[in-house]
Length: 182
Image (cartoon, rainbow, N blue to C red; front, side, top):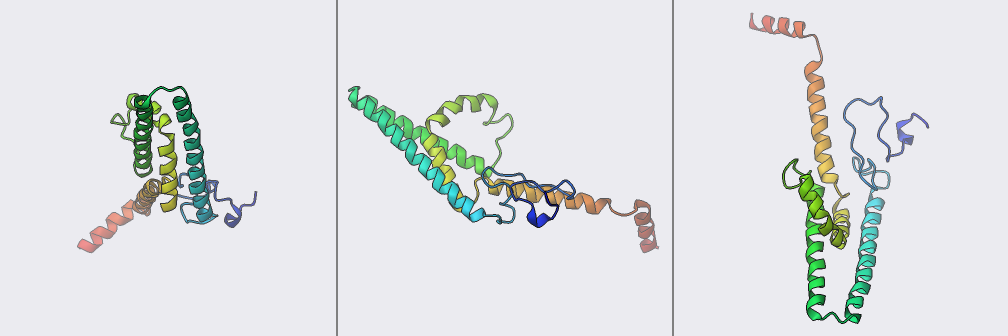
C-alpha cells in the first residue's frame, strides 16, 4: 500500500509513524467521523435506511408471531400482554442504546456484568427499539460519534499538554527563572 496519507483508506487507523492519540473507529464508519470525509454522509444515510429497513422487517416477523397467537385463540388478555411486553422491551432497548451513544457504562455501577447479563433478554426482545435508536442517531450523527469525539479530543489535549511540558532542558528553564528574578 502507498505511504501517501491521501491514499490511505479512512476505515483504517493512521500509520504508526504519526504522533499522538489515534481516533477509535466506529462500526460502519471507521475513522471517517473525525473529519466527516470518505463518504461519511452517505454512510450515515445508509446506516439510517438499513436500520429502518431491519426494524420494519423485524416488525413484520413479529406480526406473524402475533397472528399465530390469534390463530391459537389464546385470548385478548394474552395478546395484549404480548404487545405491551414488546412495547416496553423496545422502549427500554431504545433508551439503553441511546444512552450508550453518549456515555460509557459505569464500572461496577448500573452497567455491571450482573445487571447487563439480566438485561440481555429484555434488549433481545426489544430489538426493534435498538434498531430505531440506531436509525434516529444516524440522522443526527454517526452513532457513538459524540462520545468518541469527546474522548478523542480529551486524549489529544492531554497528549499536547504532556508534549509541551516535557520539551526543553529543565536545567535551562531553572536558569532562565533565576535570571528573571535577579
